[in-house]
Image 1: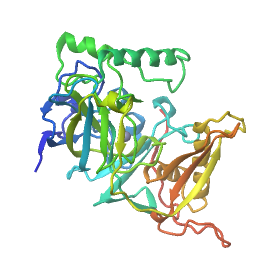
Image 2 (image 1 turned 30 degrees about the vertical axis):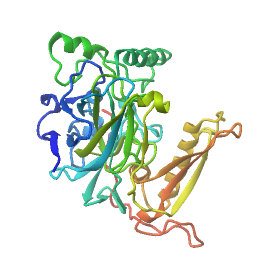
Image 3 (image 1 turned 135 degrees about the horizontal axis):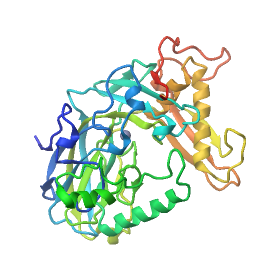
Image 4 (image 1 turned 90 degrees about the vertical axis):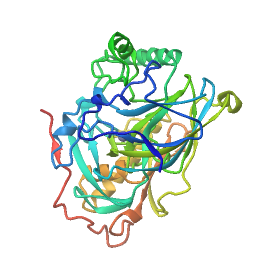
Length: 410
Ligand code: ZN
């Protein structure tokens, strides 16, 4: 049995655990050290550090303190790792903590960052998803059940000082182009009050925390990529920027649709990951690698039948956009939601299904001016009834007796 190198107690605040951190900074000390070839287990909080409860009240999603996120386990130092190497990470296995066999999906209110469809779903809402072994279903979203494809939403290595400076400079420039925007254009370092810098203490801690990068966006090192296929059985190759590499991870998802469109997010959960690490010396230059690459798992849920929704880069107001895949994917998602509503789902339930189920998103065309085409692949076998169109019209899959709890803005 592999050793659990980082333990988390879900009853304790993550701020009391010095092997947890919630910012990126090269001075965060390694929480633990391992040798190349070692395998070990890291336990992780859910991304909010336990702020969301298993109940039928969405006010915790409305009131969530986002400057606290994401709580990561690490950094794990790998002996001999040096800048320019590739850190090879095998996700040998991954699962939920036995004392926490459930996860949550939420929509943030616009004031709290909103989501992909925040104009259509402006209020905070929350659905709870229970785990039955490898399957999940929700008391708030009946008529649907599917196998999980568990993955870390966030995993990557520590940046060096030059990379951190580059991130902060370019993100500030974007933020400054429209500083009053709600939600903001970027999540900048926020002074460090809610920063958890691991083992770093005192003045050194305060100085680093003030400029440490937020964990919100994916960056060159990987980070918050939210790739559903980076799951159990994957092998990932990470660029190394600092001595020891400093691998950190968290934000486990039981399942997620491509795009993580609900933002809070997939089916979010606390859990554990069994990892194995090794090194490719000077691998970044040898393979011309700037961003991580990975081989997906040999084991994935088999949902071969899809109903595919198309979307083009013309927005809800009929405005033409130039090859904009963000707009096109939004239209594909909205088309799928309208369709699911005909089967008895509320709009919120349909939105939650697209955010959590193993839905595929594809960029289908980016050259046919002026319209990009994006497609949303909805697996039909996850539903309790027939989802295909027919001469008799849609059958009701659900009776509307339950919906996803809502917490209007205060
Ligand atoms: Zn997440």
